[in-house]
Amino acid sequence: MAAAAALRHTYYWRAVLVSIVALAVLTLLGRLSWKLRRAQARVLEERLDHARRAEYLAFHDNLTGLPNRAYFSRLLTKGMQHARRYDKRLTLLFLDLDRFKAINDSLGHDAGDELLREVSRRLGRAVRESDTVARLGGDEFVILLPEITEPNQITQVADKILASVSTPFTLVGQEFRITVSIGIARYPADGEDEQTLMKHADVAMYHAKEEGKNNAQYYSEQLKTDSLERLALESSLRKALERQEFLLYYQSKLDMATGRVIGMEALLRWQHPELGLILPKQFIPLAEENGLIVPIGRWVIYTACRQNVAWQKAGFPALSMAVNLSARQFLDDGLLRDIKGALQASGMAPELLEVEITESMIMQDMPKAVRVLQELRDIGVRIAIDDFGTGYSSLSKLQAFPLDTIKIDGSFIHDLLDNAGDRSLTEAIIDLGKNLGLTVVAEGVESAAHVEYLRRHACDQIQGFYMHEPQPADEAVLSLAKWFDNESTI
Ligand SMILES: Nc1nc2c(ncn2[C@@H]2O[C@@H]3COP(=O)(O)O[C@H]4[C@@H](O)[C@H](n5cnc6c(=O)[nH]c(N)nc65)O[C@@H]4COP(=O)(O)O[C@H]3[C@H]2O)c(=O)[nH]1
Image (tube, rainbow, N blue to C red):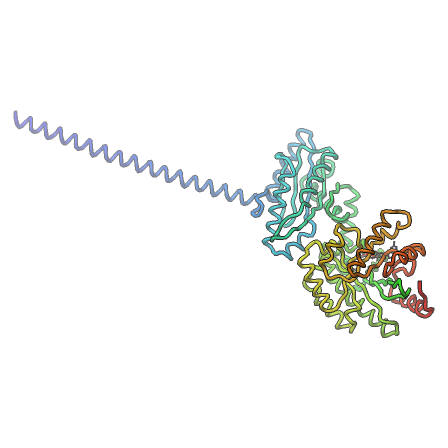
C-alpha cells in the first residue's frame, strides 16, 4: 500500500515537473515568436520609411523641399484631368529669377542657395494653401493656381509675387534685391496638355524678360511667332561674330565751354545678312541672356580702341572713346584682362577710354562693383554712369563709387522744354553732379533750344542728333574732318 502511495506520489510530482517545463518552454517560444514578429514589423516599418523617404526625395527638391519637376508634372496632369472632367480652368505661372546667375557667381553658391530657399518661402506665403509652388531646377519655379482664373485675380497674384520677391534680402550681411519675371498660361485656352501649357508659360516668361524683367506677361499666339523668330535670331547671333557681321557706329560728344568735339561713343550694330541693320536693343538683351555679350563686348572694346588710335594717326586730336558695358560683361572676371588687352594691342592711352555702365549694374552687387570700378580706375580708365535718372538710386548713393562722368538720360532732354518735372530733374542732376566733382553730359540733344538751355544751366558736355547722329567709322571720320576743318563749334 505504502509502495503504491509512494509511486503515485512520484508520478504526481513528475507530472507537475513535466507541466512546469512544458509551460516554461511554451512561454519561451511565445516570447521568441513575439520578438520575431516585432523585429519583422520593425524591418517592415523601416522599409516603408525608406520607401517613403526615397519617394519624397524623388519628388521633392532637396534644397527647398518644394515639389520638383517630376512631381509637378504629375500634379499638373492630374489637375488638368480634373479640370477637363468638371469643366474648370487652371492658371500656370512660370517664374525665372532675374540676374540670379550674377548673384550666385559673385556671392558664392551657399549664398545663392540661401537666396533660393528664401524665395521659395516667399512664394509659398504669396499664394493660397490650395495652390502648388514647385521648383523646376536652377532659378526656375512654377505655380499652379487651380482656383484663380479671372485675369484681374491672376494679375493680383502675380503682383503680390513680384512685390514679395523684390523686397530686399540680407545675404552674407548685405542687403540685396532680386526680381523675378513671370509668364502666365491658362488651361485650356493656352494649351490642353501639360507640355504645351508649360512651354507657353515659358514663352510668356521670356517675353516678360524682354519687357525689362520684374514683370508678368500673359501668353499669346503672337508671342509664339515671336519666340520662333527669336530662336532663329539666337542661332544667327551665335554665328555673327565669326561671320564678322558686327560693326560700330560712332557718335560725337561736345564740350560746352569750347564747343569742340572732344570724344566719341561707340555704338554697336549688327548687319544681318537677311534682316538688314539691327539696333542693339533688338539683340543685346538676347546676347545678355545667353552670355554671348561677353565675347561681343570684348570685340567692341578691341575695335573701338583700335579705331581711336587710327583717328589719332590720321591727324585728329586725341579724342576720348566711350564704350557701353552690359551687366553680365561688367561682372565677368575677364573684363579687366580684356580692357588691358585692348589698350595694349592698340596702344591707346587708358585715360582716353571711358566705360559706360548703368546705376542698376552697380546696385546689383555693390561690393563687387566698387572692386571692379577701382581696378579700372587704377589702370587710368574713366567711368561714366549712363542713362542717369531712369533708375532708383540717388546721386548721393553713387558717391561711394569712383566715377568720373554722369550722363543724363535722353528721355529727360527730349521733353525738357515742355515738361517742368524733366527740367527740374535735369537741373538737379547737373547741380549735384558738379558738386560731386563729376563731368555732366546730356544725351539726346536734338535742337538748338536744347543746347541753349543746357548751356544756361552749365551742363559740361552734350551729345545728340542735333550735332551728329551715330555713323559708321568711314562716315564719322568725314563728319569729324568737316567739323575740325571748319573749326566748327556749337
Ligand atoms: N532719340 C535720340 N536718340 C539719340 C540721340 N543721340 C543719340 N541717340 C541714341 O541714344 C542711344 C544712346 O546710347 P546709350 O544710352 O548708351 O544706349 C545704348 C546702350 O545702352 C546700348 N548699346 C549700344 N552699343 C552697345 C555696346 O557695344 N554694348 C552694350 N552692352 N550696349 C550697347 O544700346 C543702347 C541704344 O543704342 P543706340 O540704338 O545706338 O542708341 C543710342 C543713340 O543712337 C538723339 O539726339 N535723339
